[in-house]
Image (cartoon, rainbow, N blue to C red; front, side, top):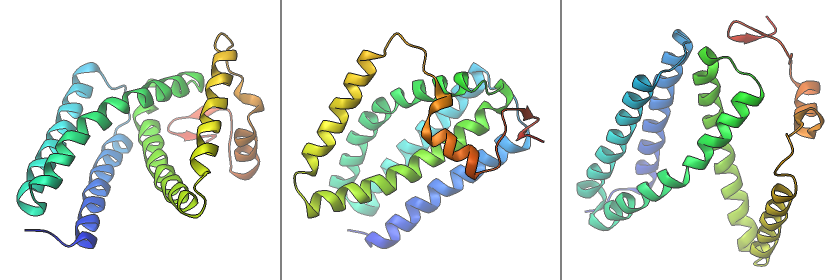
Length: 184
């Protein structure tokens, strides 16, 4: 038994959006420093949601798709741990207060997912149109690794970052934080 692929994607995106709305409502309603116990409970909730989703795939989409999901999910989960370290570095570097880190993290995750969707689409189209794109992407990764190795002992200076400069020119931005809103 199979399921219609368009409806399946709408359902998955709807579930993810509903979970994001739930998280955003909780984070925005009462900003607070998240402790180990609360983080563990939320992590357990999301692990349980992923397992339930995988089990629901079995009767809805078949054993092969369900087993592919159940096999791939732990791999993706383990690979995403490095993102946690990146977020911790960013939140620390920009001195985000503990009570606002949950909301900042949610915005970061939402932006990362949106950018991932865009970049995967653009990358897939580029690879389809021009097969040496893999070589170009590999060279970019190699260059990035070399730059990281060369500057590993230096404290990064984000003030000269062109993306940050553009953001400050384009969007209403401030270096001060007042409550949950920048600048005011």
